Image (cartoon, rainbow, N blue to C red; front, side, top):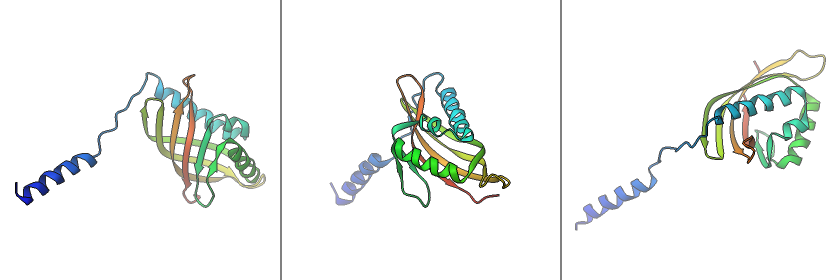
Length: 158
C-alpha cells in the first residue's frame, strides 16, 4: 500500500472519530411544560425577593458563573450572594425567554435571553436590563427540574 493511500485511510478514520454526532433528545411527555413551570417559578421568586424560594430551585451542587465575580458554588454561597444582591437592588420584573431547550433524559440545557426591571434604590425609577443565559438543569425523582449550572451575563442597561 502506498504511503499516500495509508495517509488518506488514516485521515478518513480520524475524521470519522471527531465528526460531531447529532444530539439525541430524550424527552418525556410534559418535559417542556415542566421546564416552563420551573422558569416561571424561578423568576417569580426573584420578583418576590424570596431568597429561600430562589435557593429551592437549584441543586445542592449548583454553580453560577457571572462576569466580574468569582463562581458561586453551592446553595450556601448562592444564599449569601442573593442576600447581598437583593439588598442593593430590587427585581421589579423578570422574564426568561428560552431560545433553545434540549432535553436528554434527566438533563436539559436552555439558552436564552432575560428581560428585567431592577430598582437600584427604593426612590429611583427601575432600570431595564437585558441579558443572556445558558442553563443546565437536572430532573429530580419527583419529576421537578432544578438548576444545576447557570452562566449568565447582562447587556448594557437600556
